Length: 215
Ligand SMILES: O=C(CO)[C@H](O)[C@H](O)COP(=O)(O)O
Ligand SMILES: [Co+2]
Image 1 (cartoon, protein in one colour):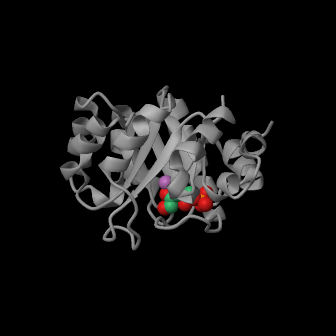
Image 2: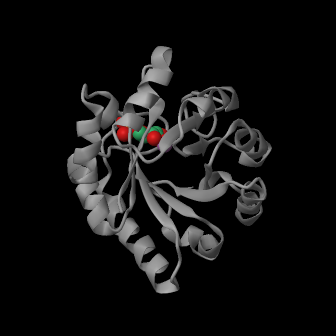
């Protein structure tokens, strides 16, 4: 089953509750929350306060993508704020195994994110420990960028590893996902599609979600 995770980075922050309900009613599976610190990535976005504020307004799992340095410092705060999935960048974690277990100790699903120029071999040693792999298909930091095609073989590689090891690990993609690039990601083995601008820049979000899911 293909899941769609609208990224609220492209929502109207003055009407965030309405924009979240709109995609929930439109068939979204997760709400993707992009947390940026101005250090790991050049942009600054939102923190645990916003996660706490949106928690009661949706039943959907909150998929919190931490684009921050030293994520260990903030994992507990995001979990307590209501995150259901917390993903950390492999490039930001000196002790990745420890960070993953810190997330799981909070009762939250743990995922690891891989930038376009980072080899997927970096996450192979922890594949058995995680619930989700997130492959970036843009360089993180901003919404509305173009899909990087060279990530497709990396999706295939992760899908192959997950299958051969017999794991229940979700494979998520994030960045430049629209109905055309979504199809390529699914063919390569992805099952969770994050999309910000391709959903929120459309009037009919339900239709956008359907098209991305390939329906
Ligand atoms: O993590 C992200 C950027 O770092 C966002 O989730 C992503 O860019 C979504 O936006 P779009 O679908 O418009 O590319
Ligand atoms: Co993201």
